[in-house]
Image (cartoon, rainbow, N blue to C red; front, side):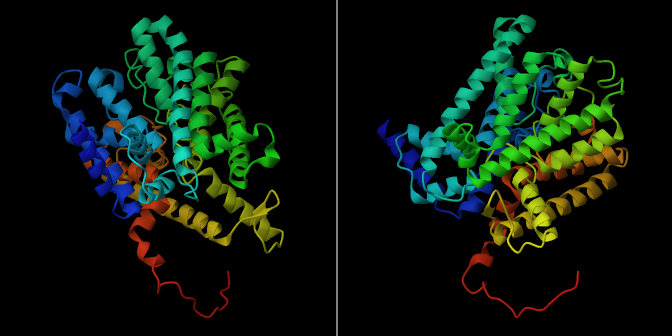
Length: 460
């Protein structure tokens, strides 16, 4: 037993000696490939037959990148074993594989090295190495507690509908999937690809799922900051203030707009009473934060609502969370910069704090790369899959990039090339724009590359 434990320690240490950014990329890629291989095995399908590897890889990528786009209905195509594999991939992807590796290291008694701590900083999107192991422990413990509470509350409803053990299973699955912002569901035995449409007026299910989504999308460091300082907003860090304010604004504005745009649409919320309309609008605004669940028919929404959904999916959640997108802080920094320029301020800041110009440059870079990647993705999928409407293509591409999982029911109809494009977009969106960029552009930070040319004006 001691020898096995020693070999495990050596193996983990040897893996962590490589470039930390590239290691994160390779780590996610390895998990996806292994997950895809396992899902392609006969034991993973409900029919007991092998599953096409590309579709298995697509599902593994969607689960690991906590997206929710699926080519097969999760409840009916995959066996109990296959669903368990998907759930494990969701949990690994939601917490980040480095957090899971750290938990494993702590369980086997390994000392967390400096290089591992630096990897954890990158993986959790933190600025400092100080207290990173403690934060990771809090992340793991907090995740277990939140998902457990969510599972208990959801089980209360599902047990009455599906029986004791199946109800508990569905409660656990949807709690983990919602907190990790994955959007996978196992309600296909009610209606395939139905998501949560059968619970569109259920207050308990809607509120629990929304709280789980928001909690997972805030970011672990923000949750910790809120728990420490409670309602004392002034004591929050600038990052936490921006996340809380931007998240609140997006949720409220999104809910109001969905309510107004869909108010008379009988195919979505038009026939509901006022309270149920508000509930459905709130859920729709919440789920676009990269969660991927839906309680109303997305394909029946108005064009304006679909466009609103594209914007919210592109923005996504907050850094260091289970969410994707360009992040709320990126959009907030860009808006703050615009207002600062309009006011003629030399300094860029909010809440009586200045924002470093390097952060602004990163925000601009993130937005630009995000737009370019999505535009290229839309063009490629439009060319190879001309049978899909333009809005359907935009939905699929931006949903993949933002790791949202919402779709206009076109995912199963994608051709091979389109599936590969979506796989790349899900991977790119989850690992992070800057992480991917920095992994291959690290040379720019080496000595000799930091120099400055003489300034000259450019007219804008």
